[in-house]
Length: 84
Ligand code: FES
Image 1: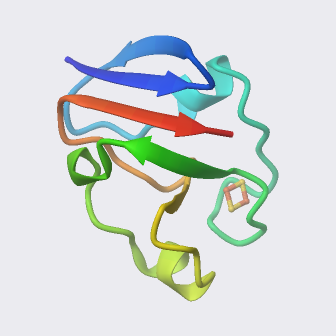
Image 2 (image 1 turned 90 degrees about the horizontal axis):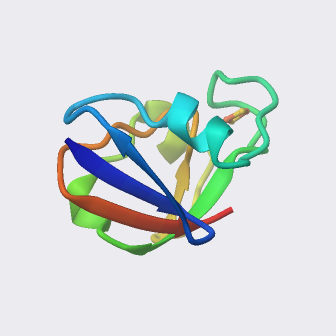
């Protein structure tokens, strides 16, 4: 299992799974859920290496190096800490 910590709240997620549902449970707001609106941007403060690399939708939005889309990111394993 991997661990996702958003704004200090923690949730376990399966290795290799999308983080969207867990992020929603932890209070991240979503819009399109398709990588287009940017509403779900989170700022990763620790463990970026534990996420799969950004996908095309994330790259197309031109996110900062420490930002990811909660609706697109997939966790590999370990712990990822982020702020919404
Ligand atoms: S909810 Fe729109 S980009 Fe994630």
